[in-house]
Length: 169
Image 1 (cartoon, one colour):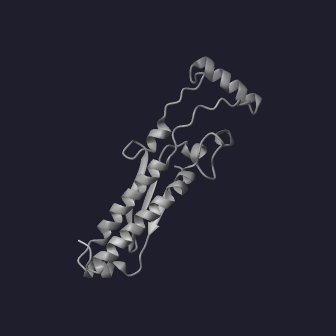
Image 2 (tube, one colour):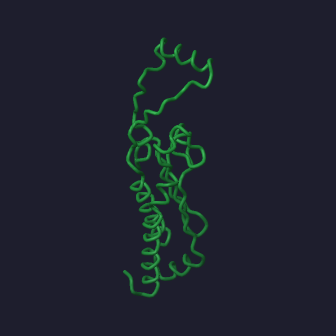
Image 3 (cartoon, rainbow, N blue to C red):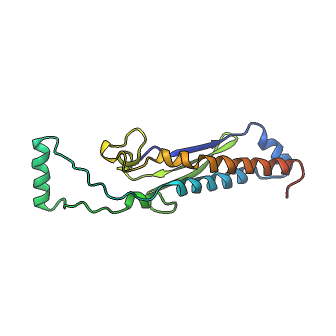
C-alpha cells in the first residue's frame, strides 16, 4: 500500500458547545471529511501516457530470466497496461482506500490504494526511478487538494459557529 493521504481535524472544546446547542458535531465532521476525500480524488492527475524509456538489463541472470519468461509465455512484449492503479484511486472501486474514522474529538480520513505495486509507482519516498517524471505521487495530489480541503473545513467551522450562536438552522 502506498502512503495514504491523511487529513485530521481535532477541535478542543467544540463537541461540548455544539452538543449543548443541539447539533450533531460528529455527523458534520464526517460529512466534511467525506467531501475532503472526494476533493483528493478529483486532484489525482489523469493516467500518464506509457513511458518508452529503455530498461537495460542489470545482470546476465536478469537477461536470461527475461528471455526464458518470454519464451515460456509468462510475459509478453510490449507490456500491456491494465489501468488497475488508476481505477484503484477512484472511490468505490476495488483496491481503493477511503476511510473516515473518529479521532479524539475530531475525525481522520484516509485516501489511497491497496494495489501492491503502487508504492513503486506513486509513492512519495518509494517511487522507482523509472517512474519519476512520468508518474505523479499521491502526495502531490494531496498537496493540490489542500486549499479546497482547508476551505471545506473553514466553511464547516463557520456553519458550526453560526449554529452555536443561534444563527444557523
